[in-house]
Length: 117
View 1 (cartoon, rainbow, N blue to C red):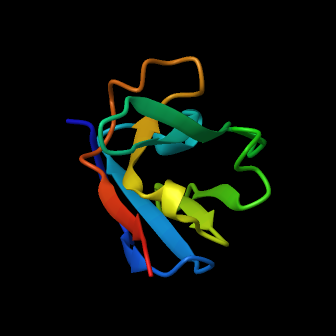
View 2 (view 1 turned 90 degrees about the vertical axis):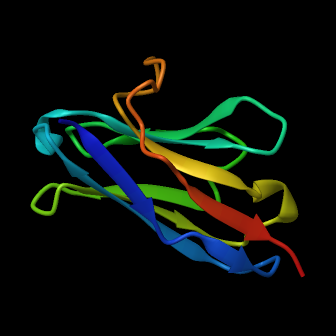
View 3 (view 1 turned 90 degrees about the horizontal axis):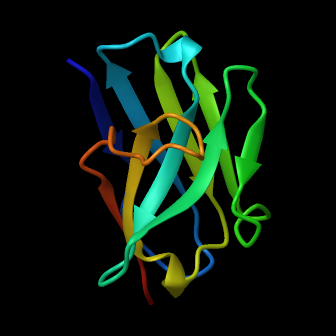
């Protein structure tokens, strides 16, 4: 059974940082592209970034200066470093199996990130 479990979310002030983690089981992590997506209240899923098996990454243009995706294949874990957070970053963040052109149907339950003073 494929499982993806996110952690690391929380309440942070504007300008702060968070590092999200996604632990995975049930598939060969190192041979799969992985992605982060988010869903803000009342909105649809928004793709944030993807990382390929080569370790190259691609980002939503508006976030690439603040967010960094990375992976640890030995731990089967995906990460998202988020810096200079803004209130508009408030959302539930999900990790998903697959690259940017998947439908992100295989994803975790998500972790809430709230950016507020």
